[in-house]
Amino acid sequence: MNVKLGVLFGFIFGFIDVLLMIPLEMPNKTVAMMGAFFGRFAIGFFIPNTVLPVPFWLKGLIVGLVISFPEAIVTNAYAPILIIGGIGGTAIGIATGKLKKERR
Image (tube, rainbow, N blue to C red; front, side, top):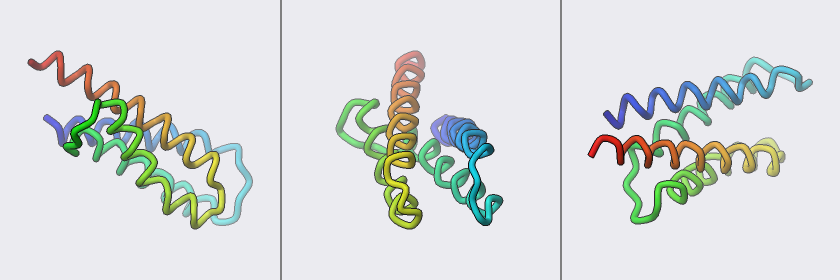
């Protein structure tokens, strides 16, 4: 169940991030969008599949920020990348927690 949930959350978060990038002007836009999609996919995938001794929302925030940091460093666009990664990770963490409680 966790892997399926991770794939679902990964695709949703990756798709949303690519949509947010459409109006932006940048060189190599296709490559940037692919990189952003897979970075966000990783966040969505790992949150339900990672065990940390913290609440789900905090696990989502931690995973979202840790996975977003390399992209933020490379692009030198810290605020937008870390904010979206943190918000998306937290949201996925909350959703994961709610879905796991329903399964019990």
